[in-house]
Image 1 (cartoon, rainbow, N blue to C red):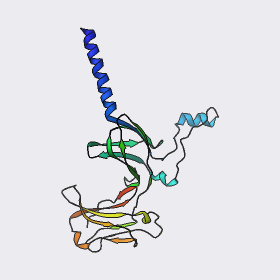
Image 2: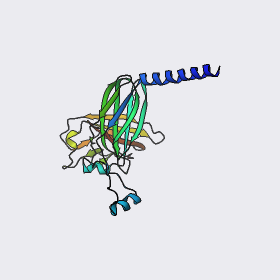
Image 3: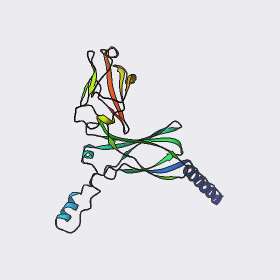
Image 4: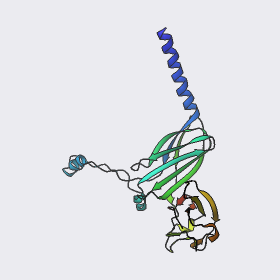
Length: 230
């Protein structure tokens, strides 16, 4: 009897694992971001006396990446629950099991020490059950305005003349929420191409006592401002 029960349990486990495997795909996400490995104090001492050779991770491909303090990947689709994970800074890679299906969107965001988005990358793929996918996501700088002013007189954002992200700007949005709710509502969307580095919003849309944020979009994703209170 015990052998029979053990056999049933084993069959159930195998069936569960097999079912899980058949309904998911294994995706390895590579952002291309590499931060140098930090040696512990003991390893540094050994390296100083020549007993070991310090091993470093790959150098950063771009010195601007040094401003990134965390990398988050979010996977979304209409027929699955959102999956969010933090990617290790020293490798820039992570492997996840994702429900198989079409139109799986992977969004990677690099945050600075202040919690602002400054780098991003986004791609959408179809995943086959049981598949193994190596997904290299192109990471680029998001469009961060040098000046954001949301008031009841002349609301606008502005990019400096030497800002190299402005040519990639595709869209600008203004979002509103009340002082008693965190829910945001889109109240104005401006689509490029943009020629003027100063982009104005409609004055009549901005009201005293409300909170506002600005989102700017390019092919790497969107940057989002802090809350503005007119």
